[in-house]
Amino acid sequence: MTSVKKRLDNVLAELAIIHESLNNSSRYPSCCLTVHNDGRISCDVIGPLSEEQFLKECEKCQARIKSILSRVNLDRVQS
Image (cartoon, rainbow, N blue to C red; front, side, top):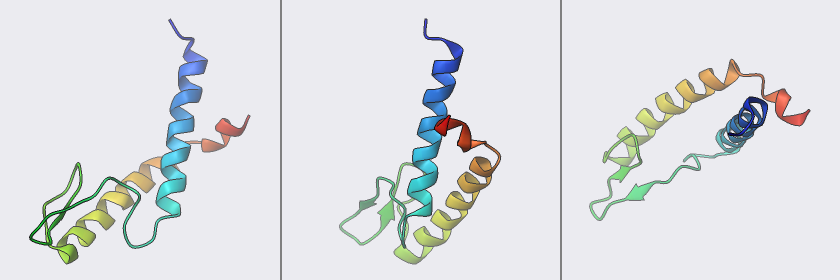
């Protein structure tokens, strides 16, 4: 079994990657988006919705994720 510290380090590294991706994204996050033939957009969590509706919901989702990440000390990844 993997040590608890090593498992925690792996989780923190993944969270750091998510944090960086969200902070460096422009209009669309760096998630796996699907653009459907009818112009609707979806991801693993939201949609399919019109682009305008999708972006509104996407912003809410990103805000929730950023809020959670703000409570995690990602500086531990560097040590």
